[in-house]
Length: 374
Image (cartoon, rainbow, N blue to C red; front, side):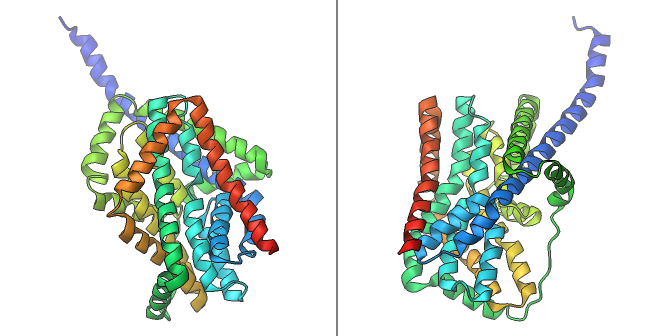
């Protein structure tokens, strides 16, 4: 027979437990976003100058694509890459024809943070398989889009022509600046830590430690009752269909002005099974659109037609990519699922997969250096 006083005590304490879980989850979420901001600061600290030098060496469309990929991988901000490209085009140092491939490459390079987040699940094979697939579906979509559209762009310039047309439509439009609520909250801690540790390697180590602490905390809290509540929220509201997922990706990324942050956040959710890969996919497409909005608004404020054209080229490319590969979504979904399964099969496979990622950075760099010497 159930003891009534004991049951009463349990019922009274449940709300407090729920509140404590919510507070702990929000704290872990704050640390998660802070770690992403610190990683971005570390990348920029070591890579921005080199990224600018790389962007200046673009000599042909393929080199431009690879340069955009490498430069954005170094600074983990496609918006920053786009801003540098806008400045180079406006000054006459770079043509729009070469700027467009660089922007295509920037779309690929901005997904590195997702892969780092997925490593947090590496000790749990089933979670790692789901998380790694979720982190790489964005990669595969951007890769397929770039290598499909680049040859078409070289010969027919659909992205450039669309951007020029849109620029003429918006000619004379004033600019505005969006304030990122996420950066307002996260920046004080990030600036404080960066001030204490103004060196790249120690800052990266601190960022990774914070990331894995936050991920571990979030995973523990999300297990059990909290996980079941989240599943209901995501399935019935936020990710109920592709249109809702896509819209959430656009709004969230435009609001926080960081596709790295918004796409990295869904990796642990996919790892724990809260989200499926099919729910993640349209969200990442929305993030691709959302990340262009800040640069477009900023370009309007410059009053430079070249700046506006480059920013709108980023939007045009992503729209073309969605038109082509959303109907063919089975391909990037299959590639990501297969890649996640391979990576999670064994420690050797995991090491092999990450060796491929290293090679994917070294080989393009060698091509760029060879191309620059011709």
